[in-house]
Image (tube, rainbow, N blue to C red; front, side):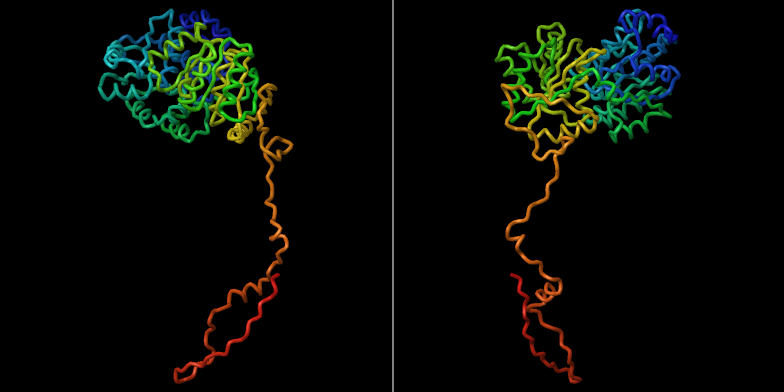
Length: 446
């Protein structure tokens, strides 16, 4: 129970108002270590309660040690605007009974307005690396009093090319601070490198992926092409029972195309991708939360930080490019212990990728067939008993099978044909005695 963790009373009051009855596993493991002031390297997926895992100990210390003359005390860096908004929402909920203030510094907002927010010395700044770098370069932000640095979804920030910005920003945090780094994967070489640079004697908190998948049914439907996939998405959204659904595509063009198809068929859908302005994104998310829109077609980048209650169906129009990305997508459903359904549409180009993700996650996706839309593609030929493609030897042609093998000594003789032999008799006067050529007989190779 949070009430028995010796947390600040106003923080406990806020937690109880949110009906957070029991800490999640990542919170159980990380809270005691974070409260001791340890640097943490946390491996946990979306939906595991990781936002609370870093906000609760930070807010406890800020509430317990008032420093009215101090500047910003905690910096939370996130890769996307959506994740920044989600972290701000959770932070506001946890600080509702205290005077602790937080602000978002991200792209899509007026720069001078953000500068005015920073001049008020909020205790917590939640920022994306790009916009935070702009404020530091313009000297409109001061991080010299920062006591806590949190890098949320660090792997995604590195994949987006923010490594140099993250390191430069942390260098502005001149005072001694506690660092918490959160990542969906620890296999990322960049995560390992940046952790060694920023963390001091870190404690590892690792939550197994399998524990996050137990309440989610994962299915695979074989498909022929994108048009076939569009028909399957229409069928699933028309026949499955769900409150809210997210359909993932690989590109912005695919997201927009699929959204147009679904809207043509009178479904209540909207799309999210990198080219959509922030104001429009906010309107889309408001409609999704309120239920005016119940299907979002999104790219991976736009869906980062997308945390909406009631999502119980995820459809992968395009397969995720890695096991960790697949887990992130699937984690949009089945949140807070609820059940969820994730369906991946697989064509001949996706099958090997799907198989590698199954091996990585040590899972086997349930195979499903929609009888009225059954694909001509039935998977790789010559599958082994475990479902993996079997290797086959190249068959010899009729000519190769009847051709005799040439002995090695005969092959050497064939190489010597037409070559002039070196002289063997050298007269003392420097003359040359020609050698009589011998008739060469080749073996019968027919």
